[in-house]
Structure formats: C-alpha cells, structure tokens
Length: 282
Ligand code: PAF
Image 1 (tube, rainbow, N blue to C red):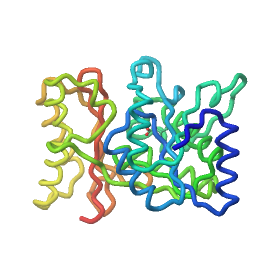
Image 2 (cartoon, rainbow, N blue to C red; image 1 turned 90 degrees about the vertical axis):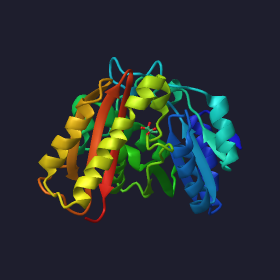
Image 3 (tube, rainbow, N blue to C red; image 1 turned 120 degrees about the vertical axis):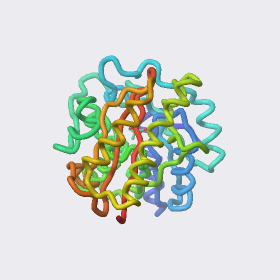
C-alpha cells in the first residue's frame, strides 16, 4: 500500500493507472475509519482494479463552533484498517496541498444544500462538494463510494457528478449499525456511556416510524409528531430536525410514497448525530 501526500504525486499516479487501463475505485473519507467505511472499501475493492482511500479532514466543511479541531484523527490506525481490506493507495494530503494560498473556487448544489442538515450547517455542503470535486479531478475515479447514513451528502454528490459530467459512478451503500442499532459514526466516539445509551433514540424513532408505516400510517405529519415526541422524551437528546422528504430533491412530502426518506439530526452531548430510513417501497 502506498501513501501519497501531494496532489502532484496522486495525479501522476492516477494518470499512469488510467493509461494502463486500470479502473479506479475511490472511497473518500475524513479518517477515523470504522466498519461503515470498511464496508464501502470492501465493495470498492471488488468493483475497481485499484482501490484508493482518501483521508483528509476537510476544514471548509466545518462551520464556526463545530468540531473541526477535535475531530478524531489517527492516520496510523486508519492505514492499518485500510491495508486490511486491501487498499492500494492512501491519499492523505495536507491543507496546503488542498487549499494553497489564493484558493478561491467553490462548488455548490443549489437548493439541495439548504435542506435538512443544510439549514443548521450553512456552507457545509459547499465545503463537501468542493473537496469531493477536487478529489474527483485529482484522481479521476471510475467509482466513488458513500454511505447512506449521510443520505443528503450522497444525493448532493450524485447531483454534482451528473450536473458537472464528472464521469464517475457514485455508489451509495447501506448504513452499518452497532448490534443495538446505533448507526456507526466517527462522532460516536464523543459520547459518554450515558450519552451512548441516549443516542439510541435516533434508531428507536426510525423503528417507530417503520412500525407506524407497517400499521398503515401514510401521513408524514403524524409520523413526524410521534418521532419528535419520542426524541423529546430522552433527556440527553436535543432534536434538531425530523424530515420526511422525497429522496432525490429532499423536498418535504405530506404522504409517504416509494423513495421517501425519513431523516433526522439530534444532538447528544457534544455529538451531532444523524440517521435515516429510506422507504424504497411502501
Ligand atoms: O463523509 C465524509 O467523510 C466527508 O464529508 C467526505 C465525503 C469525505 C468529504 O470530506
């Protein structure tokens, strides 16, 4: 496994791979790798001739007062995990490499960036799109892998890749959960044992939604109210939003239909956690 730290090295290497007819599968990450990332890497390992993992905590996707400084970083451990799933290359650039002096350009996906998490995290998706567009341009992957846990991010990146003809297939893979249902997230490491128990309310509220729908409920408002009630009953949880929306455009729906996404964000202690349920069929 090779570690590349400069944009130039990565570009040259990727160019050689493409010239040799190799397909490239890219898993973009901010490190602090967990089983969710590894599930993306295992699929990417199967799909591409070459598996590249980017590890970069992207400063421009964190707002003021967010957890950029404290975001977990452990490159050595991440490299061991990536080697364990057969990664060929780790691309781990510095800030100076990604955003050299004079950097001014950004990529935005209008409307989608403002919905759901975008309402409380102004500029977040602009930061995500800008760094992901840069990674796609530097590496030129055939496939790129994202987790369904970040459903809005995945939809926005799909839109960006299609709109800008980036020539990459964006693959979105299912949420990976702990045994008790908590969605895996690098931010779970911020939780105390009591907060970890409280954080289960996200999954429980989605299960409640599932049960209501299975029992025939189709009204989005009724489902939202029940979910909100459950979350508010958890003392350590502070609800940011519950959204019942259409997957592609992330616009709120009044009635549940195929491809409705039920998504929520909840703060527990220092951690801002998100989770969701995609209803492919109803
Ligand atoms: O999901 C993440 O880890 C990040 O938002 C991403 C896609 C690697 C961009 O920094």
